[in-house]
Length: 369
Image (tube, rainbow, N blue to C red; front, side, top):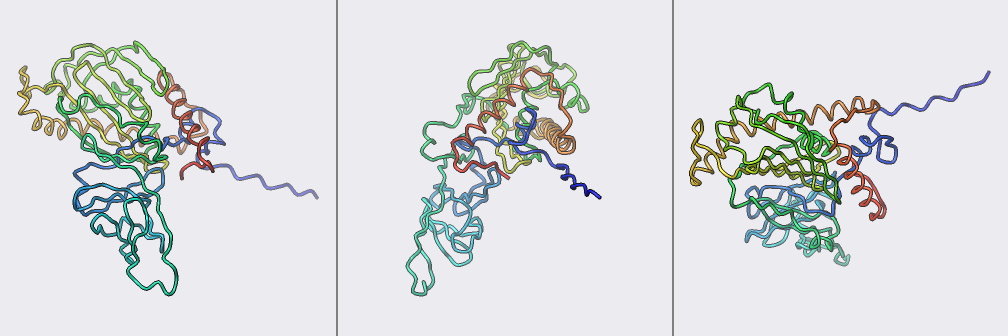
């Protein structure tokens, strides 16, 4: 009697890049190219003498600030027993492991072992270090080849310093692609944000342009204010009836009516977790429930009020939608998605192309876990 070979077990999780068969699967199996500057923490959160753990696509980094204010970043492990250096202690300009006191300079060199060497020579150890900068109130790390850091600047945010800013961040259980989808396809607004009056803002008309150039996808919608929305009681009138959304790899921004600008800086923590830092800018704001523009000295207080009452709630809804889209993909990745919006396909293609370029220059190439 012939024995049948057992069937291979069906895949229960989404495919890796080399096994993906659709554009969507490939985008969701891709990471973000590490050879860019990524916002990792608010500058105010990293106080002198403290160490913080930062995760980028499954890799752990120790970010620390000396007592004189300099910021440094190293791979998050002690060469001795592989303990995380984020548990360690800042000593002058160096970082010391909490377990046995092995101490590292900002460039990753092991500089001190405060115990007997047992007739062994001093180990020649150098951990990987990362370039660090501060801009817009954020700490930025360049995770790629440090030699490329100078050629790829932190993005210019022309509104910073002149416009009123409400800054906020979230951690969402979603791949960056889900966030790109949310930003680039504003057709979700009418359905997702209709449930709460305070999160509605504009009524969206047709797409007026969709352009792809280099590392950028730009889409424009016609808009008009939603007069029934609570947000209109605080915001000033738009100058032009247009919203632009841009995936300027690996960053996202939205310009609304010539008077608002939202910058989204994504930090991919792992395959299905993304921390997102948002800088929400308004040229001016109104005194609430009046037609009068608020004086600039009131801008900070009104930005805080808007963030507390409206902005936070709006983006919590967006975050929830990205998480349930991720959940839907994890459970139904075999089923084809029907993407109608013209910006989604080129956004997938941009994500895939940049990740494949990164893998082609990485030896050995590997995807993140």
